Image (cartoon, rainbow, N blue to C red; front, side, top):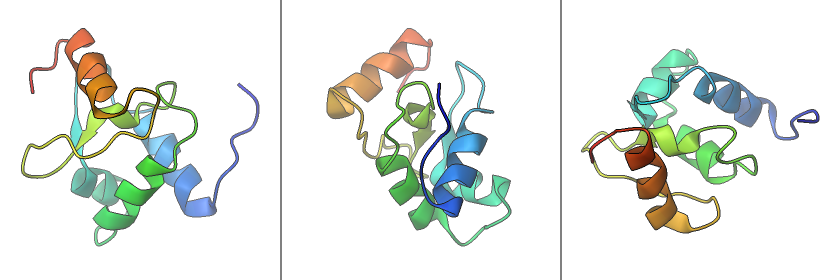
Length: 92
């Protein structure tokens, strides 16, 4: 993959997303805490929404704190997010 292109914040979020192991999910808030920006859950969600590298950068592994899926900007939308999670044996 060539060099990622995004804002400094987006790149930080996307780099963190690559550390989420296959078969696990984190919430937007957990990602915000993980990048040492605990109040930025909403900005994390926006960075996920702008991720042009899905599913290579696994934004599908990030869900809302209430357990809902949130969005998915990759090809196929929310149905594809659900498919990807199920293929990783994650029951939502």
